[in-house]
View: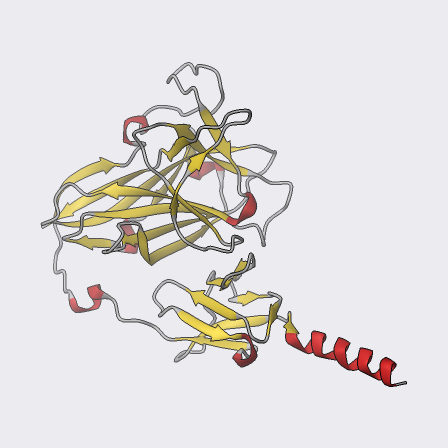
Length: 302
């Protein structure tokens, strides 16, 4: 009887220490749901992106540390035992809140990024020569493993103010339908130069009208994403694996290039940090550097 009772108590304690129920992330003031927040259990291979209603389910232990971040809110770390069904995030002030731009004037436009030279060319990702560009050594990368790829966008002049107008993302759908993706914009970290604060995230259910010459073209003019006396920013792509048809796949295009640079991380890796993305080809021992060919249109403001 004592052994049986001990087994029951032990099993009950395991159930109590594992918490997988639906939770909602909300604004601490308005109590409105916050869509597409990142939830990561630190030092584990577990993580999720909340849905459009701020909802998520994630199995965690009572003593786990859970990192939560979203655009416009302070990063938060909570202990599992202190997490309720409603999780409140505190909004953070924006630098732009203190800047008044009256009658802004566009004085110049630039195309930047690894993919700038491909803006008016059709990108075809295969291991043969395309009719438009010689795109050998190309690797289509689909959204498995919770991966995210970020490319630095170097600004022409650190003394100027720029607004992000458009993003160009070469993609390839590898089935009869598109897998939804996320596009993110990060400021550069002032210490290590890698992606830093997340300043924009958009969920894209891809449609034919967004797709031209092998690229997603996203109009960001009205998002008012400004860069004030900065050296660079980052555009990144990740995949919505939780809220999509598993038969739908969307791949981005990666190219072997010793000169280019691309950063990557994965929400399902223990170490949720950005690294320079290298790839080891099968049957080879050497690393090859891969780069994305994203591009951005920016407007210089007066």
